[in-house]
Image (cartoon, rainbow, N blue to C red):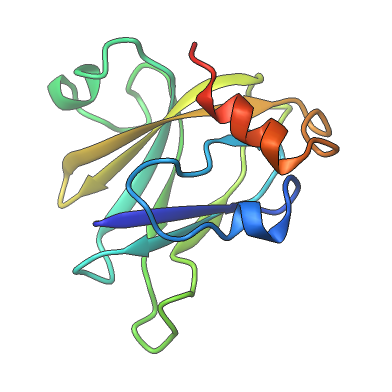
Length: 147
């Protein structure tokens, strides 16, 4: 995977949600119950998976431990695959975090290919409708706030 773009269906304008593919500055704030679509640039069309975990200060956890539904802080996972017959702009997969199953807060997206972690991404999830009225610049500011 060389670049990523994440689209959410509840917050921000079309421009905020359809940012160009990037390795940094990727949308990282969402509401619980907001569908997140993954758009990927990669040298493969299948075999990538994203696992969601409660945020861990020690990111080495993901390299030192078996990652499955029994791992500490595991929330869910999504296989990311691209239909080779579709355009580059097609999504590879999507999911949402259900507000009755998880709390607002920080979560790690852990990207895996051939059973090896190759990237992690810190994300922050807010209560439903907490971000809905915010402008793109307010959302951008939230993305730059640290833990």
